[in-house]
Amino acid sequence: MDRIRIRGGRALSGSIDIGGAKNAALPLMAAGLLTDQRLTLTNLPALADIDTMATLLRQHGIAAEIDRAARTVSLGGAVTNTEAPYDLVRKMRASVLVLGPLVARVGEARVSLPGGCAIGTRPVDLHIKGLQALGAEITLDGGYIRAASKGRLRGGKVVFPFVSVGATENIMMAAALAEGETEILNAAREPEIQDLAACLGAMGAEVQGAGTDRIRIIGKAALGAATHPIIPDRIETGTYAVAAAITGGDILLRGARLDDLAAVARVLADAGVAMTAEAGGIRVRRANGALLGADAMTEPYPGFPTDMQAQFMALMCVADGASMVTETIFENRFMHVPELTRMGAHINVHGASAIIRGVPRLSGAPVMATDLRASVSLVLAGLAATGETIVNRVYHLDRGYERLEAKLAGCGADIERVGG
Ligand code: UD1
Image (tube, rainbow, N blue to C red; front, side):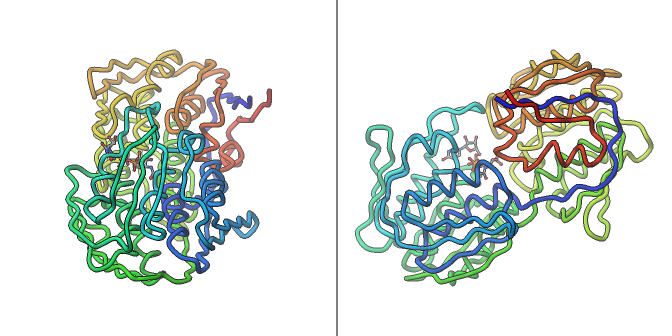
């Protein structure tokens, strides 16, 4: 199994190209199930999760042609199999995004329940209730969700008791082929939702209000061909922003959009880190050299993203003074804490909050993590640590970061992937 070896202590400088957003690309690819026409997505990142989604779509009968050089995927074709098997769903929870499109297009879907995952129980009850509100009949059987509809789904009112990105996306896609109007209240407002809305619009659905907590969709009997560019990855951007900050460096994040990162920029400003929009991207560096303790609480967009929590905590490990990080979206999303502690960090967890007391230096160690963002937080810590850090279980990183070690090495980091 590959590992990443880092010898820390170098200030990073240079520029990094930000890729297309994984969390936008996955629902956009699932939207390829909604039409037999060609849906082409551009700015496609090269990630393991994208390959998993392509495999899933292919086994549903959809052609999913990835052109790595052009960074595109072309989707389209008839649905010949409506089952999303356990082996794929278990590997990637976002597989559940095929549920809405399948039942909307062919009146039937059988999708494995994702089961437990490393960052908490993560149920799918909101996806199910939302589809029921559009007239789908849902049964749970043998670990699978079975959704059925005689004829087209019917538009309806879906009121979410709390914000779910995936459930909002599943219902938006189903509603795009439903008869009549669907209203989603307490909808997620993430930039990825707005990207999906733009794509569904380009395919012929009428979608209004994406980016607010009330989305209206008027479905069509059929959707057509479209070409859609995937938005830049705000979490990849935030991760490399922390890489610049933690090493006291200066990096231009090319292609990144500051508008999508307002909450991260605010918290980093509290910590003494400036993110400024420049022609072509965002420049990140410490404002006055010092790194200060600052607090962050994760919230649905436009709040501070849970997917940046572990990286921000790594940064606070070497800040002056104390900071508090509170996780409100997922239970059990502090798995990076014991590993950061092994590198010399001072962190106390009380329920959903962690108090971090900054230390002058972390020290390198062999570490591993059980999810994507926790893993990358250890890479960031390793960049600032003395000595050598080995991050095991690199396959987590490959799910969400394209050429991570090459991008960091390009800015002067001493980092390499080692096999075996
Ligand atoms: C998406 C992102 C993930 C990010 C998360 C929160 C993708 C592919 N993944 O995940 O990276 O961390 O948003 O920003 O876009 N919940 C329920 N019932 C449901 C659905 C969700 O209780 O039916 C709970 C979850 O357990 C969690 C919270 O709602 O506590 C938010 O989850 P959700 O927004 O649905 O996350 P995902 O869409 O899975």
